Length: 81
Image (cartoon, rainbow, N blue to C red; front, side):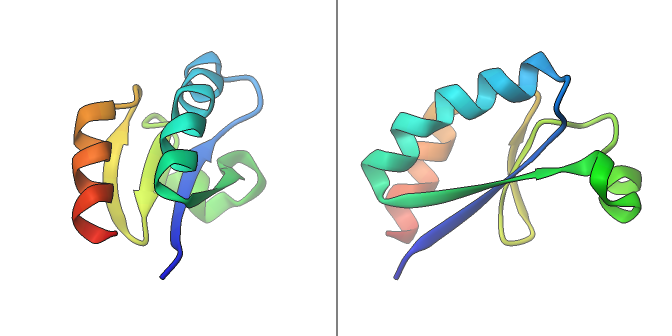
């Protein structure tokens, strides 16, 4: 089963870019795909995640926000693999 993660982001957010870069090798290691969504492109997403971005999700489950919690994300991915 493929693991699909979603990164709530915005174009001008340096924390978002940092999380995306830090996440890439972890996602590759676990065979996960990462979809990056720009919260500013969707009023519903902007209202929900505005001040929290970046936010990493698996489905509706928030794995972390602001910074990649690598150990936590690795542990989670190992469990669901």
